Length: 491
Ligand code: NAD
Image 1 (cartoon, helix red, strand yellow):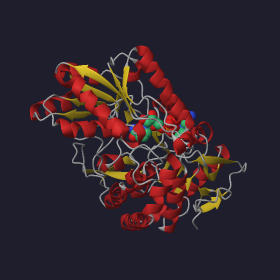
Image 2 (cartoon, rainbow, N blue to C red):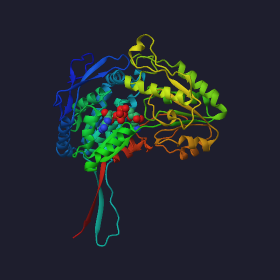
Image 3 (cartoon, rainbow, N blue to C red):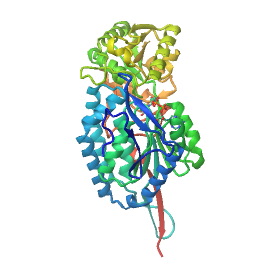
Image 4 (cartoon, rainbow, N blue to C red):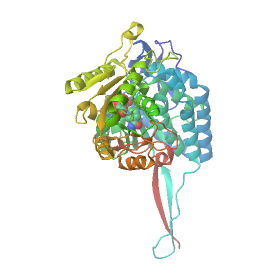
């Protein structure tokens, strides 16, 4: 069954619980909208605490039932089949993401290798999970070893900004380790998660292993975070929600993995390849309309080139083609919702009030068809001081704040002076300088002479208030495993 034939807004996209497509207990639904046009895209079942209860119970049964009997090879086979299905339906996923949250179609199509590559990497990890034997100093003939076991039922809560890859980041390690899950996608873009849940069943993932329950964060998400039979929450979203999840999780002291926001510095030294740095820093913030957690939203530029470099980034921003995400020549799509647009606009006003100068953008775009959607011009703000709110707080829109610095020490001081530590970039031809800055920055990733590039094997996550836990690579799979020590005395 494909419950995602777009164009049918009257057909309710149902919850996926225990391998079945079901209406929520209360029968409520909500609409998901295309931010490029403001039009209703689909009607989605709205789960609440009772649906979460049912989904968690199904996940628990599956965890203790047939899924626990799957050998590593069998899990691997299922994930590879799932990867093939996602690959076969990739164009459909590209369109779903573009229509549901606005990311330009060239960008959603461009994620094929990453999306499929992630699933194949998790498949490869099924067969590498294992404990160790432990030489020890205990008296007698004691043999000790560790077992690596799946942590159990995982509650996964995702944001709307990268539905396909963001959801695979949650499903992949669950399947690789033998956990089960209840997935609560963001209200603004739930369609991809539902379709992935459907294809997981088609791939042979047993019923109850991947349950998908869209619904309001404060209702369905909160119920999942507080649930006494959920062993772990894997959360991606804002730090404000992250704090609520920490609070809600305390009942059964469940494990947490928090991938939160950022205010990432992108540092340009005068000795860099400036042509490359203009395009790299600009797309490091404007790509996906700034709605990337690790977006390089603070542009730190060495003072000797500050004016000329910022002017070039402003020119680059003005030349970007902003439009409906589904058009193949669109480089920058809308922001996800009117609420998000108003939030970004309020920061623009705040920045000007704080004394920053707008050198590109700064306005909503309303020409012709654009008036129907939530389009903001890529914006460059100059003469920004690090103490301003626009340089401290995550805007999550196409807005970069440009700050000058005099030397490496000052660049590092500015780079590290926010509560976040997710991404960062350094542009220089001086290898020693690059290494020094990479070591000095307190963030989970440092990109040198590039920005925002991700690979399935490279761990991603935050320092400071950008959260804890790592996604991608070996570290990721470890987060879904518990270590059991077995100590065995002969005789
Ligand atoms: P959000 O925190 O508002 O929502 C994220 C998810 O949490 C949604 O599914 C929402 O329904 C749910 N939620 C809301 N309130 C909840 C509650 N009380 N209990 C449980 N769940 C609740 O974030 P958003 O606006 O969807 O996404 C933007 C944020 O996500 C930004 O801060 C961005 O930086 C961050 N993000 C981080 C990463 C990363 O990997 N670090 C990746 C993408 C986005």
